[in-house]
Length: 408
Image 1 (cartoon, rainbow, N blue to C red):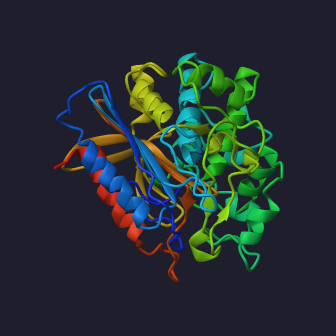
Image 2 (cartoon, rainbow, N blue to C red):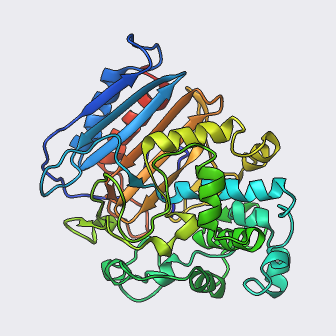
Image 3 (cartoon, rainbow, N blue to C red):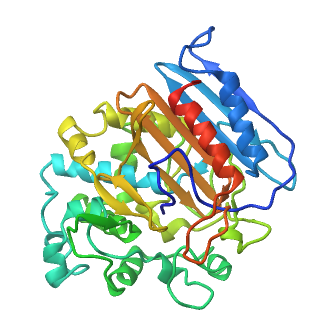
């Protein structure tokens, strides 16, 4: 599930009623006994504390620069008990999962089992039959130019019962907390909805339905589930120790509670750290750590996960509209973010109910940032559906600037 644009150093997401909590910052600088030129631990720690003071219950991050590593955490993992949040905690990373799924598809392209520009109907004729299956290619699913709408507003209808994002209802979240969805039923919801564009249009529309279809494609060509294939061939190839698809509604290992505000509709925010993630599957269900996510993107960009030709395909971008009508530069499971002061970055952001994440790696692989937050959709929404700026957004912008561009 995606959220606001990565085109600027900010997130326009949610809203939270300020939660009083003790400040509990922990930080470590690894790899050197002296401060590296590009990492300023004190500045990073101060900026992360600023996100907590702005209203985020708990936030943790890892920043890397040319072999140096800083990890920090600020705030609490549980607003009721005051349990401190830690930088090694596991977290639902949402649509960061899409990069893993896209990499798995590209591996099959390298083996000749999938062609990027072949129609999806060739592989999944029953799921996407007829003219639509002939027009929509695998590439269009990967870069969201298929014209297939997201199933999410139909699986989580809004208060008036009509499909509308981002205005889903709190009742929908509760009703689906332990519901086990089949991917084909969610795909069917998306395919039955009115198209959001023509296949291959110059600008796409972000849709989780595309990535559930890619999961079915992986199953078709590999003979195993997408989750099993990605685990063996992407997660294990990258050497990730704390990344996995959930085996049930609970997260295994140390983790924070995860608070959903739903743009002010849930006040105070409610804990959804226990949730059946079948509603997103290979589109957004992974659990990981900020360390593992940084390792993954570093190995993806250095050619360890897919070859250089496949990576070049992943980095061919188009304009894609997200749920809030903002445009992002989107490749095949990768966002491109250009920051004039410090370069081009690649990565993804993600959200699940109660959890937010962002990970960006500079094109040369030397500078990385991964951040996780335990509150989602903290800002209110105006009449046009646009998130209104919140102090958390400004504090995050400050942290992102320091994390990706250094102390200047």
